[in-house]
Length: 359
Ligand code: PHE
Image 1 (cartoon, rainbow, N blue to C red):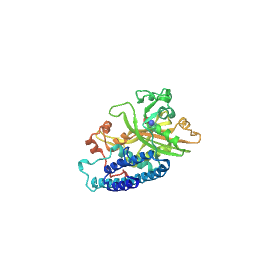
Image 2 (image 1 turned 180 degrees about the horizontal axis):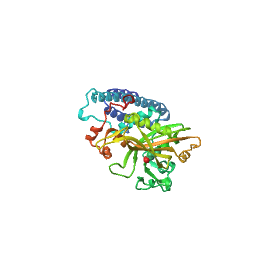
Image 3 (image 1 turned 60 degrees about the vertical axis):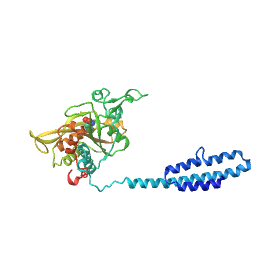
Image 4 (image 1 turned 30 degrees about the horizontal axis):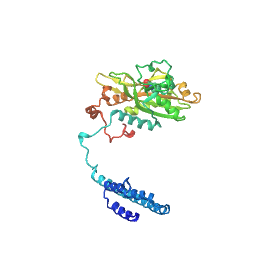
């Protein structure tokens, strides 16, 4: 059989192949190791050089033509196969969900969404960072002295040292707070800055009020004239919106964090009776977070001139905020994955947090 005849035959077979398997068989019978075209190619060796020149070119052109025909037929067959699958595997999304299958938004996610709404309205945007951190971002850049107790094994989960590095440089850990992202945000962006960070944090602790993994919200503002008054006003506005309480009393108690100076614990006003805790007026106080003015050493660590810029930072536990707002008594239940708990405390996925509706 000569090249022209073979091409005619193969063209016919390619067109007749009506699924991908049949087409693959044709391909192997033409271009495979023992295929017809491969056979003809082998015959070139026996020809005289003049003959080979002419026949060789013709054969190669024919081989390319057949390969192109195979490829375009393959495209058509693939599309036919996909159309058939799409028709067959169609889901009718107009069907109602089954009530027993209805999912809900976890109170942590709901609280985060509410926080995002409130802070976005105040001009903050979101920064992010990894759960696995290094010593620099978790401690050194945040002005923790070398022997600070938080660096000890009993608080911090350390991972095996990074190979090929030594000392602090080799250390890897699960971040103990979201303050790591203060450093990340300041290294990534030039001031002025208004950032919030939300995410998982880890400390080796477990009882009614501590779980080894929990969530924090961190906020920071860096600008030229930012001061403690701005900090208090910002927090007061945020808590009022979050708890839906007007004129919420907020007080600062002096405290200590290596990365802020001065530092304060934040308390909000509440009234406590045996059976109820009410956020708002009243004569009791509830501790709800930590804050302060960003320490000049922290600004220096990220190359910001503390003589030009200053700012504040604050941090709080997201579970605690959710517990207070939604009356959830035990922290540990957040992470047990009990579907009855989820169904009870979960939120309707279609009900997105919105400032206009107050939640
Ligand atoms: N990182 C602190 C903690 O985990 C909270 C904090 C954040 C304090 C920002 C001050 C400023 O306890």
